Amino acid sequence: MKKHIPNTITCCNLISGCIATYWAFQGDYRLALLFIVIGAVFDFFDGMTARLLHVSSPIGKELDSLADDITFGFAPSAIIFNWLCGYHFHELPYPIAFFMPFTAFIMAAFSALRLAKFNLDERQAMGFIGLPTPANALFWGSLIVGAGDFLASSPYYVYGVIAAVFVFSYLLIAEIPMFALKFKSWGWKGNEVKFIFLLTCIPMLAFLGVSGLAAIIAWYVILSACTQRK
Image (cartoon, rainbow, N blue to C red; front, top):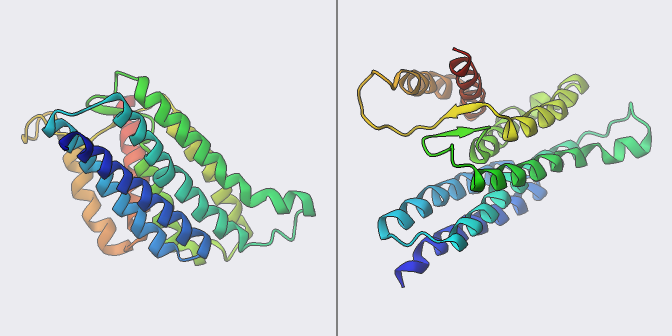
C-alpha cells in the first residue's frame, strides 16, 4: 500500500488545482489562491513522502508534472483570464478585444513546457533553472487578490498585466539559475542569499499583506538574477 501514498498525495494536489480553477472562473480569487496554496502543500509532501518511503517511480514523476500544470499552470491562468474578462478593452477593435483575455493561457502552455524540461534536466537538484511553477502561480494569485481592483482601474495597468504574462512565461523556461531553499548546513557561509531572502520576506508580508507574496516572488527573481550575474 505504501507505494500508492505519494501518488495519492499528488492526486490531492491535482484536485486542489481543479477546485482552484473552478473558483477562478467564478471570480472568487481568494478561494482560488487558497486552493493553489493547498496544492503547493501537497506538492511539497508528495516528493518527500516518496523519498522517505523509498517508492519513487517514473509514473509518480509524470503524475506530479501533470498535477503541477493544473494547479500551478492552468489555475493561475484561469485567474488572469477571468480577471481580464472584467475589462472590456473598448479601445480595441472587437476581434482583438474578444481574444485579449485568452492571452492568459499562454502561461499554462509555458508552465507545461517548464515542467517537461524539469523532468529531463539533471542540473536542478539543489536549485532551479527558470522560475518554478509554484512560485509563478503564487505570484499571480496573490497579485490579483491583493491588487486586482487597483490594477483594473487603468488601461495602462491592465496592459501591463498582459505584458507581465509574457515576461513570466519566458521566465518559466529561461536559462536563469534560481536558488532553492535547501540547506546543506545552517551556517551563514554559503547560505547568505537564502538568509537575506527569508529575512526580507517578513516586512513585505507585514506591510503589503497578500500582495506581499507577489512582491516576495518578484524579489526572488531579482535576487536570483543578481546573484547569478555576480
